[in-house]
Image 1 (spheres, rainbow, N blue to C red):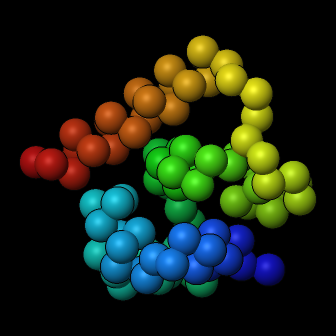
Image 2 (cartoon, rainbow, N blue to C red; image 1 turned 60 degrees about the horizontal axis):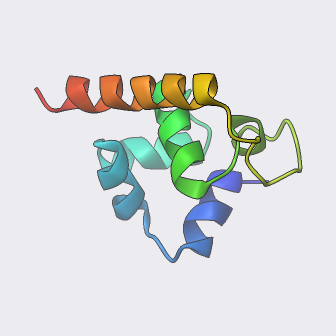
Length: 91
């Protein structure tokens, strides 16, 4: 089971496309996709939002692909983590 790869391929992305979205190298993303390196929560948030799914689905904790119902608190926290990640990588 490789949900990151499956979701990426469903969108016809290559690893470089996703790495660019995350502001990381293709090599680093490859390690995440192969589960050879732990993925930071901020990146999981970006991926879950981008693929419109949940972190639980990405991590294999559920087979339910749909995202959770809209939740202003959760969405605000995701947005905060995404902004924090992009700010950190823009310096």
